[in-house]
Every structure is written in C-alpha cells, then in structure tokens.
Image 1 (cartoon, rainbow, N blue to C red):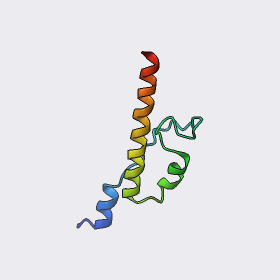
Image 2: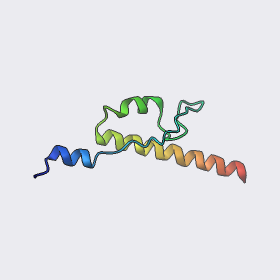
Image 3: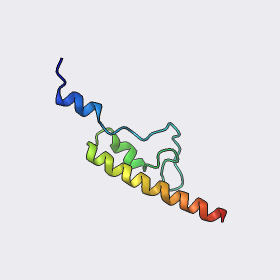
Length: 74
C-alpha cells in the first residue's frame, strides 16, 4: 500500500509539548510546557511552521526561567 503525502505529513507533524502539568503562572505561561494561553489555544489550528515558532518561544522561556532559578541559588 502506498503512503500518501497526507499520511507522511501526519506522521511527521510537530507534536504538542504538553506534559499534562497544566497550570498557568502569574504571566499566563503554562508551568509544564511554557506556552502562553494564546499559544495553547492556537496550537490545534496551527501549521507546523507556526508550531515550530511556538516551540522556539517556549524554549526561550524555559531557558530564561532556568537562568533566574540558578541566579537565585547563587
């Protein structure tokens, strides 16, 4: 059976970063996946390029939070 381009796109789609720790901080950023409420709401209808942009933003937030936490310990 041949694989269609739709099947391939679904197979390699950008997956949600959700880790089921859904709690928003004071800035409305999820403490589990680091997405904003707007990004969480947009995820379902977002194309893979948009999802990659969201993931890049979440990684920046994660790193910033880690730096702040580490500087508080020092």
